[in-house]
Length: 176
Image 1 (cartoon, rainbow, N blue to C red):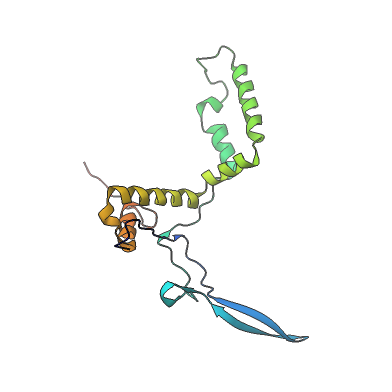
Image 2: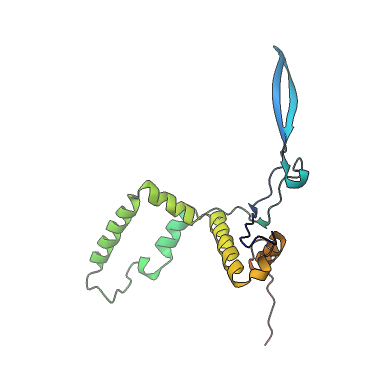
C-alpha cells in the first residue's frame, strides 16, 4: 500500500456477523436418516477463520429503525403550531384555502412512484447514511491529510478518530 499513491481501502461497516463459517451438505442415507457433512469452510485473508467468531466490523452500527407511521402522524399532527386549530395565519385571510392546499399536497405525496418511494426509504436508512458519510470522510481525509492515508491501518485510525459511530460520547457537567 505505501508505494501505491491510489490507496484503495476496504472497511467493514455494520454489525457483528453470526459466525457461521462452514458449508454443510445433508446426504440421505436411508428413508429415516441422513448424514450431515461439512464440505467447506469460509476464511478471511491470511487464513483467518470466522467459524464461531463471525466478522467484527471496523465501524460498528447497531440497527435503528425509521420512525413508525404512528410517530410520523403524531409529529405531523401535533408537532407544529400550524397543525393546531385556530392558529393565526398572517398571510391568509381565509384559513380554508391553506387547508385545501395541504390536502392536495397530501394526495400528491400518496401518489409517489416506486423510484421516489425507494429513494425516500434509502434516505432514512441509518446504515446507508453512515456508510456514505464514511466514504466521504475517507475521500476528504485522503485529500486533506495524505500522510495519514499511506496504508490501510493509518486510514482506519484516522477515520475512527474523526467519526463517532462506534464510540460512546461522554457528556460532562460544566459548572459556572
